[in-house]
Amino acid sequence: MGFMEKFAKRLRELRLEEGLSTVKLGKAIGVSNTAICRWESCSRVPSILNLIALAQFFKVTTDYLCGLEDD
Image (cartoon, one colour):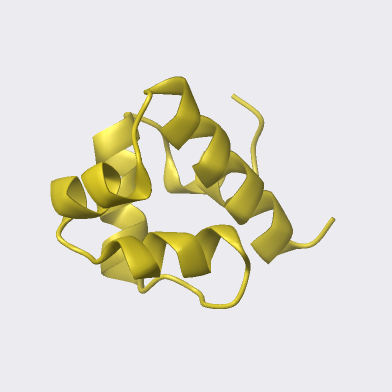
């Protein structure tokens, strides 16, 4: 599994664990729900600022989101 697939899988898992829709997550970090959907489907890559926003929101590291670490 490559970087984007790992990122997409972890993003979706974290979002669902929190019981969030793509709309609610998008509003929480200041992006559209379409952006969230595209990240989860591997059709787009988030900017570094959006990656950081996601990590802060979910209280995980960027390395975890990117699949570089497992904890």
